[in-house]
Structures are given as structure tokens and as C-alpha cells.
Length: 539
Image (cartoon, rainbow, N blue to C red; front, side):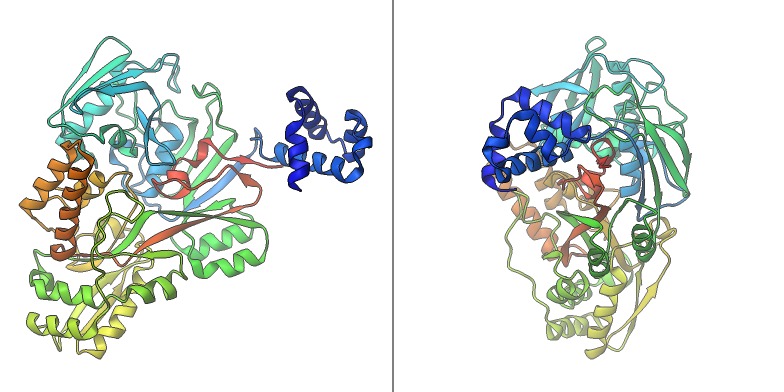
């Protein structure tokens, strides 16, 4: 459509635009529209452009109705509808069908009110959340402060096993001021606290909930069926508090660990959206002309983990040798086909305002040989556990295996199945791989994966100076001082931790062209795991 035609369409008065789009919606052709609006004198070319403008505008309008099938990359009998226990992208997506949080993270990475109508603080330590009125749970019960208190306080119970317990521990006091206001006093100031409450573990459930198989929440969908490791059926919540959505009648959500199986499901039309597609599969997919790609660059990474408390990683020189053996450029070009950014063994990506620009660690086999010699592993065989569950870890391990063999070290790559990898191998193998989903703040990345007491401290690295920097930065309201503290913390990770981060991966979700409304979000794949509420089918 020409700019002239687009301008002509936009120049119509609002009533004429509505009438025009309504006529197109009912099936009017170009001649009908020209006659209706008296555009014959404009010339067919201009009139046709105005008609095209109406058609395009109509296509961009969300349509109500229809159901889709969606394939994620993970499924197991440990699948959960308890937000506190959610631990992977499939759990996060599933929970976002059925629940809301007090806040949400928008496309700029900023925390915005959700179930909270507003939040405010004077000192970053005492936060007041005013709740929306008129919000009901799926069972008809109204949302009150009691539900928020229950949802937040349950993270503090060690017996629950919340995946966010360490983050929740900063909530020193949680009280209600009537039915519609909650006050949270932290143990220390945290300027990012609303962003923390916008993550999937902190979604709100009804007071007293013990049975999470029903998925009772305030979210855009209700649970029609939940079979852990098999599938989840979500059906529209007709009484959803946010009038803009959802648009779909239902979603069937399930996991296919094998990437080729997800591609096949797409190509056959069995699913309309599949997550985490390998760049090497794109040529065949794009060749059909039937699909679009949602590329999300949000800081997702697959990392090599060398545990520092056991095995060869107990020797610092072995860790330095492995870091020097990582060919980051080749990983970006050969494994990710360019859909990645070079990383530098630090978890905060360049898109984050607190990223530290450190001297890039180079691929240097001779330096690796030097450190392996000091570690006494030359001539040795080192088991390395990899799995398709950790995106492209098998391919990374194979590249390292080839380079290590040239300098006298045998890396025995032990490929294990996706099923059970996260519970049986991740963080348990002396040398293995992880895959970390994006987090919206620097504090979350550092707190969850690198502080000495973090449940997901993958390499068992413990550094008191680092812990103090993270806690201090959390409370610091001066942006420059905070940036310097995060810089120093990243230097320590880069130099001392047992984690090797070669690239930040662009997540590729592929969807049929008929599925509309998808856009990248900084919190992760499939619109930060929250696509369900916002997508629609274009007839």
C-alpha cells in the first residue's frame, strides 16, 4: 500500500473509517467500498489504496474465537500448576495461562501494575500495593488482600520448596491494610522489588489453596485438563478482569523434547506455535512460506558448568582451561547460524543497562593446554554430561571435545536423555551444562544463580565479596554507584566462577502466519511466557 493511500485512509473521519472497515468485514469488495464512500472521483488507484488500508487495518484487529495447539520443549511428570514450584519455560507458560501477578514486566523490561492497581514506596524498603477491585478467581471468589498474603507468605515456608524462597526471604513483614491494600516491608531496600513480583513464581493464588491441579486463579484461561507430562487444556475465562483478552477459545499446550518433532508438528499443521526451534531448521520452514519467526534476544544462555566443590573443577586451572577452550565465534556461526551474541562468561547481556564491558575472553587452545598442564589433567579422560534438554549443549560439547583432543585431553561426552535431565543431572554432574532463561533484572540473575546461598548456584561458587556487592547494589538508589557495584560483581563471576557462558541465544519461536499478536518480550520466549492472553487467529 502506498504512503499516499495509507494517508488517505487515515485521513477519513472516524465514523467513515468504522463504516468502511465494517463493510470490508462483511465481505464488501473494492467497487462496493468506492461506491459507498463516493470515492470514484479519486481515481481507482487511490480508491484501491484506501480499500487496501482498510483491509490491513482490519487484519490487525484481534479476532475472537478458535483454538490452537502449542508445543514447548519440556514436559515431565514433574510439570506443575503451582507457581511457587515452577522451574522451566513450560511451567512458566502454563502458570501464566491461569494466574496473574501483582505486577508484570512490559516490553521495555519495566514493572507495571497488574492485579495491583498501583504500587509505591518512599525508601525502596516499604512498598504499598493497592489491589484492583472487581477481580474474581475462576471459582467466582473476589480477590482480596488475604489471597495476596497467602500467596507471598507461602514462599517463606522452607517445607514448601519454593523456587523463589531466597528472593522471598527479603520480605520481612507482609501485612494487609483492609481488603484492598498490602504493605510489604523488606529486610533491606530493593529498587527492583516490583519487577521481582512480576516473575512467574510470584503469581497470585486463592487463600488456603492446597490442590493446584485445578489451577484456580484470576488468569485469562481456566483449566479444562491437566495431565503432567502429557498436556494441558486451557479454556477461555469468560469473566476475565482485563476486557482486552483473551481472544482464543482454548489452547492445548504440551511438550516435545525432540526439536525435530516440534518442526514436524509445525510443518504438518498439527501445531500453530512451537518454541525453541534450531536455526538449522529455518531453511526448510521458511521455504514453505507458511510461517513467521518470533526472534527474542533477551539474555537466554546455555552454559558449561564445572562444579568447584568436586571433580576436576576443584582445581581453578582446570576451569580456566575450559574457559579458554570455548570457541565462541564458531558456536555463534556454526551452531546458532548467527542467531546469537558473543558472551563473556557473565550472565548480564549487553542489552541490560548494567552490563559490564569486560575484555573479551578469547578462544586460545595453547592457553588451555597451559592451564590443563597445571591442573594435571593432560592425558586424562574427563566425563562431560550433555543433553538436548540444555539447548545445543551436545553440539557445544562436541566442538570442545574436538579441540581438547588436539592438546592432549579427552572429553568423554556423555549424551543423556532430555527426560529427567533437570532433576537427575543438572548441577549434579561435575562437568555438565545448564540452560538459563532470561530474567528482567541484574539482581535476579545474580541472586538466583551466583550468590553463595542460591539454590541454583550451578558451580557451587561461594564469594563473600560478591554477595556483599549484590546486596549493596540492590539497596543503592544512585544509578552510577549501582552500576559500578554490578560491574565489580561481573568481574568476579568472569574471573572466578565455574560457569562458562559462550553466547546469548536468540530464542526462535515459529508460528503459522494465521496466528497474530506475537511480539518479543525481554522476559523470555513466547512473549515472556505470556502469549496466551494476547494472540488471536486470523481467519
